[in-house]
Length: 83
Image 1 (tube, one colour):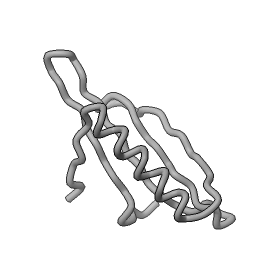
Image 2 (spheres, helix red, strand yellow):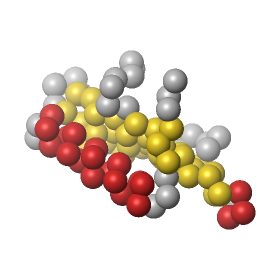
Image 3 (cartoon, one colour):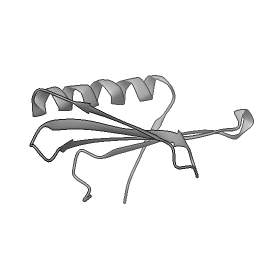
């Protein structure tokens, strides 16, 4: 699937605590055109886990993504530049 402007990638790395995590967020539409928020997280170097949440509108999906982004920052994750 091609990346969009709404892709966000975070990491949380603390070698002293053996912490090497990633978290990714994306807003997409499914095959029926329903906006969805896709979350992907886990330990860096592993396959990780994925969760998909359907939303009523694109605005609701973007608001959910913003809420999740703030939660990651509160928990010590840093936004990484995909380039």
